[in-house]
Image (cartoon, rainbow, N blue to C red):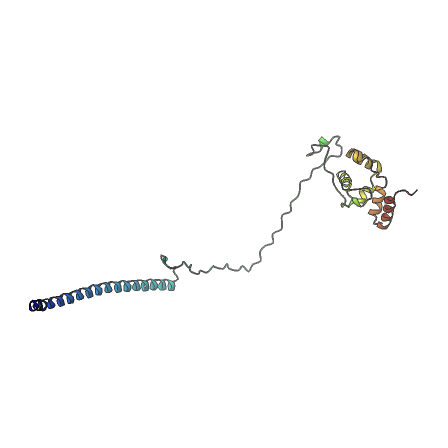
Length: 218
């Protein structure tokens, strides 16, 4: 039995060797073909890039813009630097433009009017007072608080000079019209105090106000 087995193996070894050699030859051929195709693809890619760069170089020399190139998705987008054309300097001086002066429309009021309806644009006899003087702090006057100052301002009395030229009777009338809360106020000294303040006689005004604060001495 052993001689028969040895004879069978001696006959199959050459066949196995031939099959192994054939298989190795086939694998080597497949590898060579694949390597050749990969090398050809890389060569084609390099040649394409060289041709593109050559075209860009020629156009750059001729002063022509670069052809559009599809960006590579695998690389971050970087815009090409560009130059902003600078405007030519104008050596001539620019003409001076005078600013437009806006003139407000004026309304002429006739001197012989009998009613307020005759004044153009005036629909009511009650109008906002026109202040000609610089406003002063009327609360400096002894007896005048914020509410009374507002009452006087509404009547157009906004300065020491205006209060000094206002009669005591008119001030009493304003206080009476403002309500019973202000009827008990005594404005008899307000014009005189305002006259001292308008003249800048603050020391005399302070001494007088101290006397008014103390009240009449018994």
